[in-house]
Length: 327
Image 1: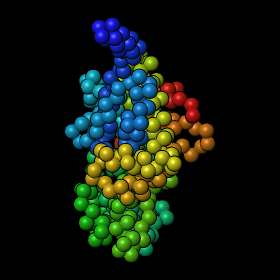
Image 2: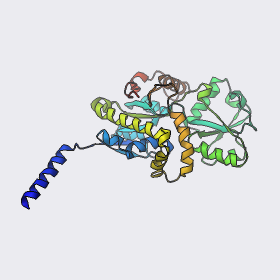
Image 3: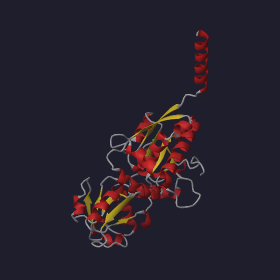
Image 4: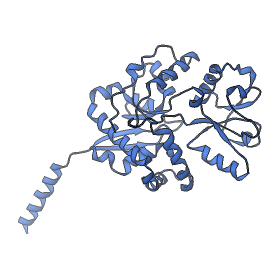
């Protein structure tokens, strides 16, 4: 009996010695769990991080959870932030580095009713009421569109947007800022049920490319722990590719439903295809997560023109363009 127990303990000991301890990594998202974080959650639930020897804690973001501040303070190793957040932080001296770009097209659009307010170009905004979140990146994008198309702010009316869509439903505001892969699905369905048509204004199609969510870390993390960075990024992007694969749609919906209990699964099913279109690169053979340097340059130029950041920010040291693995 003693001999059998000894053999058993030796086997357990040898097995434990053969198991490498997973490195603990903290990953802070930009916002609460929603369709824009489905790939992050998918990578965790389906063991993509674990297979790279990482134990990743995927934490939700929000108005009181700034991923960039947490990274700077050492409370998180990686995070998600939009380009305007990154550029503002870098302008203040933060050692932030961008590893990958999740959205290839910014999901921020404006919804409108084409039968009431026909739209062919921003010139059609003259005399209209446009919704804008003052201090948000939609304000920055809108002002860039106005400047690009030669429209003075005095030629239209800006309406301060809150979470209440009533002014848009009632027609008091003609164009309302909205995220194409999130609220747009819900609002569009309500309009359809009411027998109304709707369409969207895409800043990208009008020549303003303003970068949205990207994966970030610190330069110190990149230089001191390059192997962890490589493994984390490989697992994360593989998880995203799997989550956006139409063949895995039902599983992606199930994974998100475990954390986002506010959004009905039927809505998520409609949000996923839109998210796929916004995130997947248009050019064949382009790796998922590739950093669009030209779009980053335009984003920096827009913010500098509006005196939100100084001119000449060193994008070459901010954008780690060679870390996204090939497909």
